[in-house]
Image (cartoon, rainbow, N blue to C red; front, side):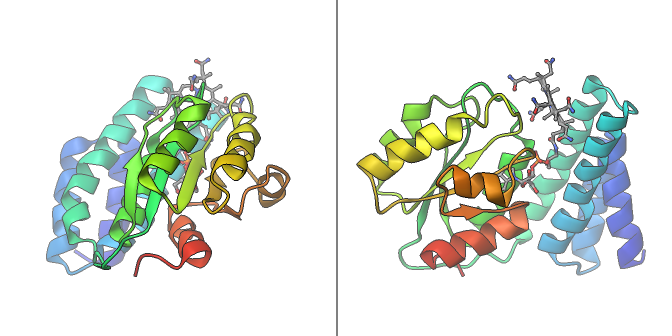
Length: 214
Ligand code: B1M
């Protein structure tokens, strides 16, 4: 199979929520020598972007979306061990989570995977995380970055509150934000040190902020 065919197949299998096909194509990608990072971003993540668009148009419904996420996760399980992880002596720590009131964690999980692969130590707080927990854990772990994800306009309003608390209690920790409703301008207004539009950019921004990872 050609590279383009495998990547498109991975994206299509994600959209279709076809776990078996996604798993097999992830294995095929490895066999064909495709970079795991590329397979994730241009296969699985590209597929999830199509899912988001279809949902917006009313062409997909919730149960189908959850099947898509399952297919994506099954492919990620195969691809994850093949990511070229960079080992650094003292990895920079990122406390990552989806803010309070928000259970959308598919994007956050992709960001986590990419940061992990780039050599960051990610402390994943999960989703619907109480505001104060971000700063508590950042202080306890002596983290360099707090990463906040929000997918809803109703939940993103927690971000400036968390960042304000962070800047008061742990001024050396930087804040990075991302998620559907967040823009670079909004991130700036919220007092964030960095904004990333997707998981690949999150790694670049994290590195530019604290110089960690590879
Ligand atoms: Co819902 N949902 N949802 N949803 N959902 C949205 C977000 C929505 C935009 C759809 C819509 O109505 N147009 C809308 C929010 C509207 C608003 O802004 N107010 C919405 C709503 C309203 C809801 C419910 C309230 C519906 C209801 O019950 N009435 C409910 C909310 C429950 C809650 O959170 N309290 C709900 C529920 C759900 C499901 C459970 C069915 C499911 C989530 C499953 C899960 O995540 N475990 C779901 C889904 C899947 C979506 C859409 C369709 C897709 C989101 C997604 O996974 N995208 C979404 C529509 C859309 O986004 N267009 C929608 C794929 C993912 C790879 O992309 O998450 O954007 P994304 O992540 C990207 C970037 O944003 C970025 O990198 C990621 C990877 O490249 N990024 C970061 C994300 N975080 C980052 C952090 C960073 C850096 C980059 O640094 C720290």
